[in-house]
Every structure is written in structure tokens, then in C-alpha cells.
Amino acid sequence: MTAALLLIRSTSADVLPDNRADVFYSKYSGGGMDITGYSATARAKITENFALEANYFIDKVSGASVDVLSQASVIKDERKQKSGTLEYLHDKTTYTASYQTSVERDYISDTASFSLSQDMFGDLTTISLGFSNSHNKVGENNGTADKPNVAWLGHALSRTYSGGLSQIITKNFIAGVNLQVITDAGYLANPYRSIRYLDPGNPRGYSLASQIYPDTHTSTAVQVQAKYYLPYRAAVTGLYRYFTDTWGVVGNTYELDYTHPISNKWIFEGRARYYKQSAATFYSDLFPFAGSQNFTARDQNLAALDNTTIGGKVTYAFLPDGWRIFKRGTVTADVSRIHFNYLDFRDIKDFGPPAYKPGSEPLYQFSAMVYQAYISIYF
Amino acid sequence: MRLRHILILSSLAGTVLLSSACSIQPWVKPYERDRLADPIMAWDRDAISSAYLDHIRESREGSRGATGGAGGGCGCN
Amino acid sequence: MLSTSTLLKRCAMAAIVVASTAFAAGGDASGTAPAFTLTTLAGQASGLSAYKGQVVMVNFWATWCGPCQQEMPLLDQMYKKYKPAGFTLIGVNVDKEAPAVKELLTRKPVSFPVLLDPANQVSKAYHVDEMPSSVIIDRKGQIRYIHRGYKPGDENDYQDRIRQLIRE
Image (spheres, helix red, strand yellow):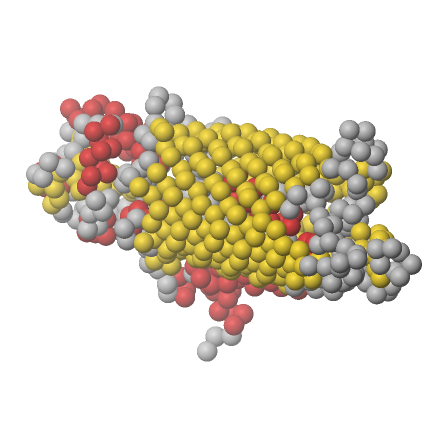
């Protein structure tokens, strides 16, 4: 089960961006999971005012996540995602409409989005507004990876409202603030995760039960960011995001990026990110007994955790000045290492009785490596 | 209701910012945008890569949203 | 002291006025074209006075401006076409540093004169508020038309105005 990719990330309202095609490879490796992704994207201007973009993405998952207690066998799944976007520029306003479909054996998601971006005040200020509507169908594979047997459990509807303001402060400095409110309703839990409660009758000392999630969820995120041009030609970016939701999760994200180009052929980028969140109110690693709360969860995403990311990216322009119809060609390699540290989620897959009584197993932590490689052609 | 208030307030803030009745003129001229037009000053040079990283984080964290940026650049046309 | 709602209403209306004037791609203008002297890439001094009596189009451009690059070949064609009739085009480049300009013009040369304005004095004098901007000046040295921005098809607009002024 995966979250839908956020489609509309940034727009520019003075000219439509250059035509571009990318071929993308990604790999996530960590916490017992290996996910390989391949993607192709192309965008082109049809007229000076209209641009179309299409993207195809395929993800292959294999592994056994530490909290998937009910599955004995290794997970193997494939996710296919397609999206199409239309952009229209009129004077200083860019209108964007897009549609995305994501299909996995046990999860189907469809999202329609619309946004507009307006340049104003001598092109120093940009205001964006966006709305997105998503419909998800959630199921559970009760069979195996090779012989699946999917039971559809429910639907979820999600609405996203976004607003953003970007302001040029000086000729070296730009700042922005984004606000996003997301509201979901329906089947919101991950069906593969279970809670555990103390059970002296069980040899392990605890028994499993299904999670019970509320059927609504509203979240608000505010991000402030700033980018500064350093005189020797480099850029430094700082951002802070505050997240809060009706489930009691409060998340704080801090990120610092540094971009350093060399001539018009190389761009080096380094990033450092720290994230900390508090647990959802209905989350617990070990409940005292069955039925102790109306809502129960033991999904590691809702635990109290922090994570630290260190990453770097290198872009090499093999075609810096273009050739015939191609304006520029680059190849990029991006590597990140994320270390996850859980404050109230225990590793019960690797540790148990008699050495560890329920509730005394070591707290879980793991490192993940994220690799990306892509070729981009501008034409 | 609260959401509508937030959206109305933010668009009003933007309007107040840009009006000449408040006697403020754009202080960075179009011919001074060379640094802002530099690709390294774009909020997002590679949207596919950023979207992928966002997806990785949203799948493993309880937070979501408010990522990305708009504006800046050449300001041409 | 204005009430908050009145102030906000007035700001909103002024914003709409400012925004709508900013949307106009081209407009008739007036006034004497400010004189200027700048240097070419080769280091020679030149200015508006060198073209007295001709119809002059001053085009403000930069190496980092996409639409500016788009219109350059068309401006070059236009220059070659109308030069015999007493027209000249001056490309005023606003880049802070010359090497990028030299590199671009070596790759994509133009036949019209290019002058460098790194201190942005001329841009300020002409109140450039959009990139690119083209200022069309008549034979008497009066500014007649300012075109802001560039979208394919605008070159027809330029040609209409130039033909009109050449006939005067």
C-alpha cells in the first residue's frame, strides 16, 4: 500500500518551461525492503501557451518489512502509475490540470488535480492555489506473491487544498511559504499491519489483532523555505515544515541544501534533513489487553520517530550547449542515506521470548539507501 | 470554515503586497534577475526526482504535504 | 485613519489596475528618447546619436532570458530587411558580465550592433519593466512605441510599426 505521488510541485508563470524528456531509475533498499523503480517522462509545448506532460512509473517491491507480522512469506508486488498533465499559460497566469492513476494488486488510486499560479507585482510575487481529489480502493492479498487472492476491503476519498506564496526578496534571495490541508475519509488503515496486546495465554506473551483506524483524517502542513545565491555562484536552501493532524501526529522537518555548479557542465548538490514526529494518539507498540481503546494502531508510520538524511547529487551535462534540436543533455546520480530511529516501536521480528519479554524488545532502528539515476534531454 | 478563512487571508495578504495604493514599487528590476534566472536558483530542478523522494518519505512518515515551490526565475514576458 | 476593510478594498482595486497595465504587451509611448553611450564587445563606444535621422529600435536583452534568445534571429532578419530604408536596431545587453555575451554571440551571431549596459544605466533611463523590451524611436528621436516581452508573432507587430515610422 503506497501513498499517491504529489503531482503538482512547482510552476513558473512567466514562460512555460522548456521541452524535456527524462528516463529515470531508482532503488530503495532498507528495513528489509528492496524497491526498484523505472520511469519515463516527457513534456512538450504544443503552442507557446499550451504544454503537455506524460509520465509512466513502475515500482517493484520485494522484501519483508519488520512490522508485517501476519505475512510469513516475502512480499513481491508491482505498482504501475501513469499521469498526464496539461498546462496553459495566459499573460501571467498558469493553469494546470492533471490526472494520475496508480495500480497495484491490492491498491488502486485515482487522482485529479487542478492548480493555478499567478505572477504579480513586477513578477516578484507568485501566488498558487491548488485543489486535488483522490479516490483509493484498498485491498488485502490473502494469498501469496505468486498465487494472489485479493480481498477488497474498502474505499477512501481524499481532498487536498493547497496555497503557496513565493516572494523575491532581493536579487539574490527568494523565499516562500506553502500551506496544504488534506482531508481523507473511508478505509484509511494499512491492512497488512496488526496491533499486539499483552496476552499471558500466548507463548509469545502477546497476541495480534486488527488495527482499528478512525474513518476520517485531516492534516495541515505549513512549509517555509528560502534560497540564497552565494556570490561565487552557488545556492543554499533552507526549509522548515510543521505538520499536525487530527490523529495527534505532530511532525517537524528541517532541511538544508547546498548547490555548487562548476562551469556549465557540472552541478553538485548536498542535502541534510532531520525529521521528528510524535506518535498518533491511538498508536501503541503494545496494548495492555484486547479492546482497550476504540481506535488502535501499530503502524510504524504513526509511531514516535526521528530520521536523519544525508544525500548528494551530481549532474553532468554531456551536451552542455546543445546539438541540432537538443538544447541540453544531462545525466544525474543521486544517493541518500536515511537513518530511522523509533522511540516507541519495538523490533519484535528479530527479538522475543525468552530473552525479551513483551515491551522490552529493543527499539527499532534501520538505515535505508535511496539511489536515483536519470538522463534528461532538453529540446 | 477555518480553511476558507486561511485561504481568504492569504490571498488578501498577497493583494496588499502588490498594490501601488500602498506605495510600494517592485524593487528588483527585470534586468536584475540574472541570478534568480540561474537554474541553480530554481526551487526544483528535477521535479521527477523530488516527487520520488517525497513519495519515499510519505510512505514512511506520518507527515505529508506542503512541499514544492513556485515563482522566481527570469520573470520574462 | 482608514478602516482595515476600506484599506484592503483600495489596495485590491489598485492591484487590479497595476496588474492590468502590466498585462499590456505593447503600448504607445511618448517623450524624447534618452541619449546614451555604451561600448560594443570590441570596446568601441557607440550610442543613439550615431543613428540620428533613422528609425531606431532599441532591444533590451540578456543571455539568461529565454524569450530574448527566441526573438534574436527574427530581429536580425528584420534589421537586414529594413536597414536600406533607414532603420537600425541596437541590441542593448543587460548582462553583468561580458564573457557569457561573447560566448553566445560567437555561437549565434547577429548583424545588428550590440552594446553592453552592465551597470544598467540605460535600462533605468528607459524604465525597462519587462524582459525583453523593445523601444521604437522615430526619425526625430521621439519614443513612439514600447513592446514588452516576446511571444512568437510579435515580430509582425514590430514590422508594422517600423514600416509606419519609415514612411513618415
